[in-house]
Image (cartoon, rainbow, N blue to C red):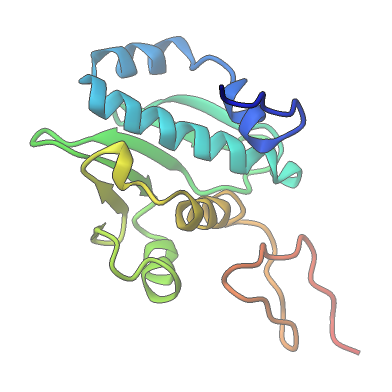
Length: 169
């Protein structure tokens, strides 16, 4: 028998993620079961990472460009994240194509992952989704418009950028 999930754990938070917005649920319902499973996993990763970053404010979920999209309208901290399917099969996590997020991700963490241009990380099935690297990419996207460190302060790609950078003394 599987041990119960502690109520304060990240896994419990994912299991209790809110129901999708009605239009997002309709999108998910229209997908094939394997694609739906993968999209639900990506959605859970986005919600998990957003819950870990309270400074980004409220996360919204809606259909944009015909796909589930996630943004932070109150703080405008995030660049838009989308999840979706492809007509010939597979699913992807999309970021805004005019950001450097995919380029940074490929250079620091995502080498070897199926990256599509400057906008997406693509997967065939839910089993192909590596949660740890994607949580980093999602965190970068959710904090994309927050202030970055100035001269003299650095952070590694695995760190969250600080909310406010201080001038060096």
